Length: 102
Image (tube, helix red, strand yellow):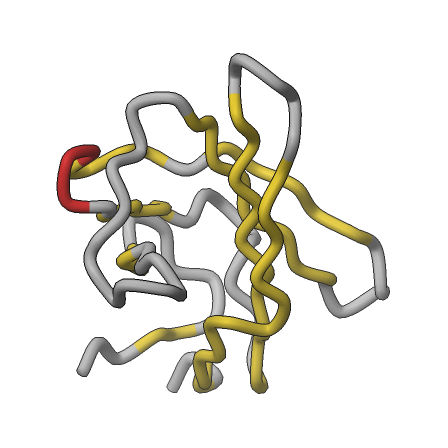
């Protein structure tokens, strides 16, 4: 497992989108993907996710400067269909522990 450290940049998380009926990976060709979380000031942060392997439903997000804060961080993933604007939301689907810098 990745060791997340407060203040690091370049660390990433990966998520695989699974069809809840078939349990097969979703093809993400017609979706955009965003990730949401709240920072230490309780401000909602929204960022685009990279389609790492669209055909197999794999998304990735790489953290930027100041985005990793010590403690437990919980994330929502939102998929938006580019044809219909309908969306799928997975709340608190990813949770990571971030340690303080030593």
